[in-house]
View (cartoon, rainbow, N blue to C red):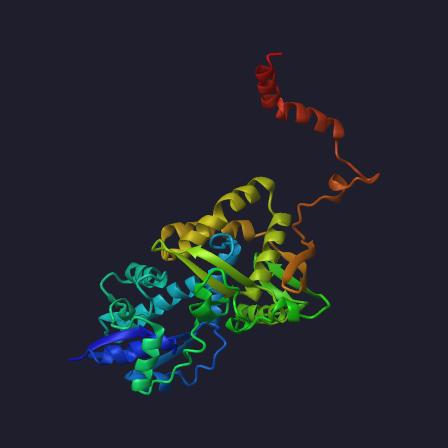
Length: 400
């Protein structure tokens, strides 16, 4: 009896080759493809998977679940890995892993499989997520053990078995796209001294080619959840993100070029495109600063974004610490309601105004006009007490 495996299948070079490679080794392959907003027509996926040897191909629309249950918590955490990467690929892995486990249990498969390499981060994300949900399922990672040493060899293998793939020797990029962003690597990008070629980018216009006039966008939030763009309400969160992706791409927003530290210890040069996420991060950070008290905001900013990003990047989505941080972030976001206005212009996004019914900005305390109600004498006494430790230190140092 053939060994049954559920394969996380993107339809790209690696996973297309994996189907045939597993079939040749006696596996019955069922492919699973999640629509997480990669912007591709997935109608051809089943035929493509079957042409490579799959016995069944499952395609599922997860865009709203991905946006609401994975992207939104990460937005509320303002999590950016190493201060730059909005974790787009890393976020989709636990969701896909959850679905792999569900279908493996439903279809009596003893294995699930993924297309990550031995030096990739995704091997950890997939496998830790699967084991957290079902420790009895075995995870296969053919790319870690097969005979191919380069993408060129994979392309030749695909040609031999008439497997349709998009990658070519002329455009050898490895691309992973979803609603929250696009990850691009390989080819000329492996030289960190070389500027990314323009053909490496998938959706964003170069800032030089962006409109010469800025565009303003207003984003409405309710309890930390973005709900409107320029006054238009969005019932589905993923559609709001798509709208911001379109606006941001037109203005060259969200291009990220970084050398990052992978889990396995090597440094990797990646470029990302995340226009919608970049806009939302700027808006939410500003709104949170308006509606959160100083003690809570400082604790949050000094602790949560970095730690949450590490948790997601390192494959620990299904862990108690992530769930606990979500509870903290949800509490802070309760008053994060209001509108933030941003300016998009030639690759930059900046907040220009904001308002909230829960704003902690009190104009008669902040103003320098005659309406000023701040007690300046109290400020003098506060400064004396607050500065007392340094005054004592200065006395000791000076010997006076």
